[in-house]
Length: 294
Image 1: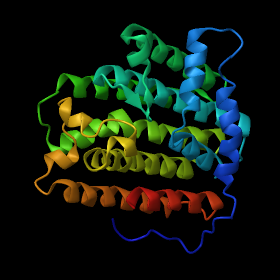
Image 2 (image 1 turned 90 degrees about the vertical axis):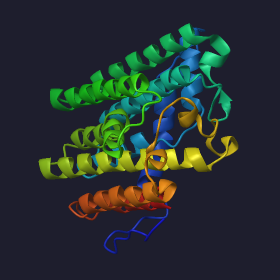
Image 3 (image 1 turned 45 degrees about the vertical axis):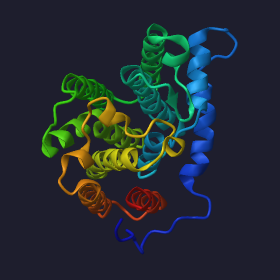
């Protein structure tokens, strides 16, 4: 899908820093749920976070924090919060879409019904807020995270109320910014705040996360049209079936036009990385961009 983004001044070690940290993060995340109480919501939460996923948002938090004074206890609180917020949103999405599968496994709403699924999503949200409160961050990043949650909900509500009405491409990008990209941005800035990065680095990382989130959603929408259910873990073309018109459906040149806009946002990400110091984390972020544009 375009040129490989490189940075000769950055080198990735054989064992990536974020890989090592995310191994520890997995244990932290699973430890947020008690297996001893026998309560449904605790087991369901543990099953959901154990089901896998890319862990992109926690990875971005970890990498952003390493541009400053890395503090595992603080950044894991941020990373855990964004991952649980994301997981809660997936539970609610599955309810709205009437989806039976998520990552190849039955969804909670398909096995337990809508009511239990709603409360499970709310339970995950409460866990996320607790982690954020316990992260030790100052008020500013917590407020930013709250604004991201609010925008995400507003974006989803607008999208749902506008089903079967085609938006303009510009309106699509506005919705994507709210329902997807702002949480990516908060993942980066939250990580940067946890590492006490300076203002210039924090803002560059936040813009990187915003552009990355938009590009990620466009990529996901392209895959929804191209890939099979076996590849994505959900029914292909589900957005169009539910009256949600994504970018490939809105452009005359379809998927290729969407790819061109994806490349544009990947380039915006690369421009923000140029403002960051050459550290191993920068090289890892560049690798993520190469994956995004592949």
